[in-house]
Amino acid sequence: MKVQRGYHHFKGNRLSRSEYIQRLVTRALLKSRVPDNKRDSSIIWELKHSSSVVQIARILALKRGLKVEYAEIIAALHDIGVIKTGKYQEHARRGMKIAKSILRKTGRFTDKEIALITNAIGSHSDKHIYSDEPYTELIKDADVFDCSLYEGVDQEYIRTKTPEKLKEYFRRLRRVRKELGLPGKKLYEQYR
Ligand SMILES: [Fe+2]
Ligand SMILES: [Fe+2]
Image 1 (spheres, rainbow, N blue to C red):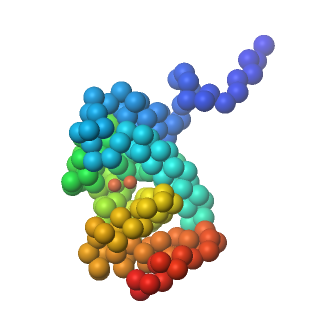
Image 2: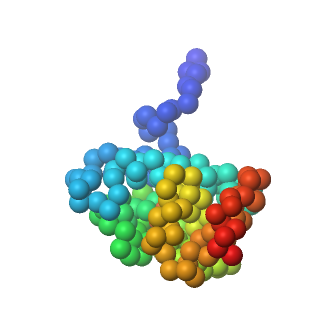
């Protein structure tokens, strides 16, 4: 008799490649030995942000006709450099190396896939730069858009970014909001 099995809810061993990576990232946070007082942000923030960036990346991938699976994996791993060490300094480049080793260890990704995923992770902090790599642009957009949905983050950008970078951040946010059919924000118009 065929056993009916419903959604796995991330239990057991029926996870897809992407789900496996998402669980691994979540577990890394839940079991992290780096406490909040040694982190630039908190474990709670990293949990919330990594999950919500995955969802936004899915939506953008669907909109752009890109592979949702790659978008999810890149999004889940994009801040692995911070997740493991707690520090934002150079986390994209550091995360690239960590992601490479994680993906290799699974034995479920080709070298070409690993390169595509880790290149996007390695460049995700360069939000002021536009590349012609669709997954790199997708993760930059998903990341900055997710952050902008948290109250106070726009103001944090204003406080911490150079005027040139700030302009590009807000340009990205204007574009993503438009792409998703969301109303614009007055604040972003002030920094054209
Ligand atoms: Fe990041
Ligand atoms: Fe991020």
